[in-house]
Length: 240
Image 1 (tube, rainbow, N blue to C red):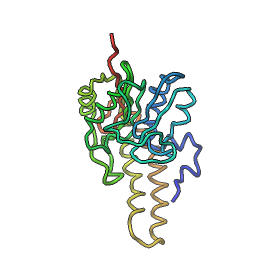
Image 2: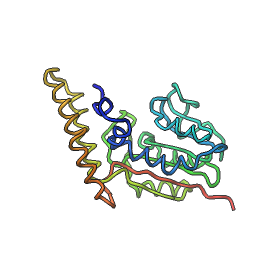
Image 3: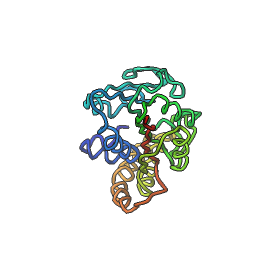
């Protein structure tokens, strides 16, 4: 069943209502894209295929050189490979993006070290990952992370933490979990006469009405620890 927001809301408002995606898009737009320009090499590590590369056009519009790497071949994937052993030499990228990938790898510490390896001195890693996420993309969903754990991973990879942002607060997390009700009904075996009304009602109630209220309340949560996840900006030391 198609998203009601995609049908009835303007694109910008529909994007804002995606509580699990909007903080990530805003983070990359505010922190990473301003650093991109002609001559800058960017790697999207674990990019997914073309439909999943939401910010591809905005990145290319900067004039930066974008390379994408994913475990699965497909449209929009430049290199097929594992983020734990990428087919690139040392110190060849100015910026590495890793959005919602780290939870799907078996060796997060090794992957962070690998991303640091391909960064040039002074290069930037922009990494996002969940802290409180339902199991998804089974069976390739191994970890959730606190900001303490991510700080440790960055430190061990030789990266300094420039910035860390929560992906919303308690009420944004609550909005996401309530909207997950739609998926519960979607997976449930029941008569269409019951399933369709339940899904439509939950989409309207949890995907729109309560979400607007909860997003407003979320603006009050100034130091969230109960969050959907974390957005980290790390930097490799410059050569003196």
